[in-house]
Length: 475
Image (cartoon, rainbow, N blue to C red; front, side):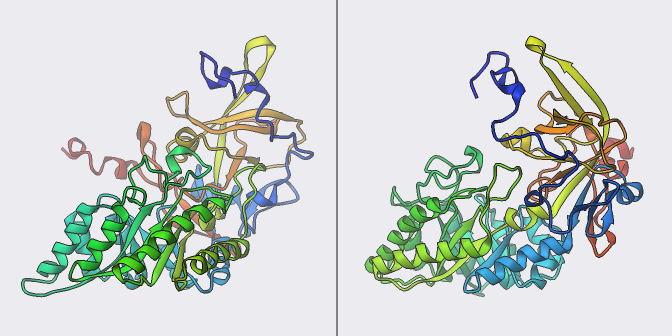
């Protein structure tokens, strides 16, 4: 979109909406691709998820509220496990994690990836087998590494020479289990393959100019492998590559796999080390709007396996045990967020144009992705059937920020009014995880729904929660 000195919202064409957005034939209808599998509209137009009418859910639990479709989550997790039957499938907990979800992940036969002490705590509190946990992170401290090793975490994804030295010191001195005792740690070396994923720059993670991993091009990745192999007590599993997030095209994986397997083969030839594993990362995209066309797990499994097998034949190396890390692709579509409309404002703009602003009772404190990543979302009226014509609107939050936008462009009913419920699909990944107390907002609850029953998974925060760390408030 052409730039404008007053900002992107004033640029030519900004008031027409994006080219892919079309007026709906029925403003009440759901687009199935965007919603969890149990979502439907009742005869009177209310949204129902997991057999629960969201009007009843809001009446009991308030709004805004995240609504998590258990059957959909489990089905998507199972779909990856079955499609990637010969792989180790790690659910990327950073997308959304709580003890209930960790238990669902375990019950569906997936492993779990964590990237912070807090996520590890949740996993262990849920009773997750630590041997099936992978630990990521670009700045793991000595206490964090010690705890991971002591807990028996199955693999630690090493991200720097400093971390490699810390781990080597831990296992060589036996400082994790007491003086004179030697322990061990299984590690993977995270590499940057120099691949520019077709996604937002902040979620593209395999190009050279960013914080993650060891560069293959510079030689750091090979040196990290050499050091890990020589360090007593470190069990080198293999290489880890992650090219970014919200990716729909496997061409990036193909280029990355070729470069990573070139390193894999070099390690075999020059160091005599046959690394048994290879992690291809995650980042598989989902449909947030009608412009998105995600692949299903079976298609992804076929294409990724073909890529790796082809490259392994070319380098004459055995195919390693493969792993992937879907997070968004499992939980993203399984959750929606329900808001109550507070105000509807028609704002007159240049050249007689009008934009309809719909203010809801949440915003960037419960979904920062629009402001952070310029993400697109859809929405639907969720509490009744509308007879209004579709008009182009913008759904905004209640925070003191002009950038507090939830849905940049969407057709909403012309009769949308205060008190109506509005639901946003595809909010399972990185919405609750990135939620904040900005403007001292209280983070919404996560309500699990299944078979007509709603269960609180994470309760709504209270003002007491908000003040619990405010020392002055305790005086």
